[in-house]
Length: 210
Image 1 (cartoon, helix red, strand yellow):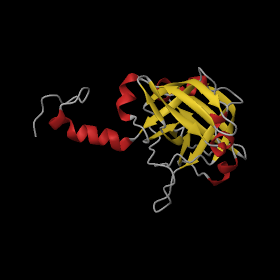
Image 2 (cartoon, helix red, strand yellow):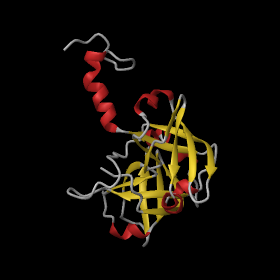
Image 3 (cartoon, helix red, strand yellow):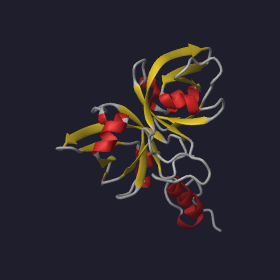
Image 4 (cartoon, helix red, strand yellow):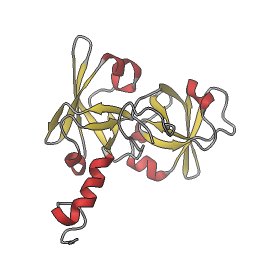
């Protein structure tokens, strides 16, 4: 489990195909603290670290086709910055919100309006995720825990503070850029558990009585 509080922006130094696996190598200071098999959120996607054979100061991770098809990693190239967060330890402080690192869909930066020190950014999201996004609720964008400021029919807007702009990749995201989205998992569980009573659209349990 993660919190959506980015620890470091790493740099992609290598990206290569190895049969049906894509091997991603990221240069990051926190690489020294990550062991083989540990989970790391990379742009909000939970990946497994492969330490064996990795040069000092780098983190090697493996991506399968499923990951590439359901995330924005297809747009990542050598030199790209990526948000990194290690899994939160049991009993650790939950500073952001509950983030699983399971990307629900890929959104797009629609616009950004710079302020004197902060930015307002609008994102488009897949229609099937819209019902999980509410004003003042939480959403993870490229692994960054954000509070929804505005809800639109086809997306949402956030206000980015100077720290977020400086310490994550969201400071450089431009209109048209893809981003990984993870909605609040609690909302998904509530929908699933009440589907038999509410018979809501898309529940997959229409007509089920309990």
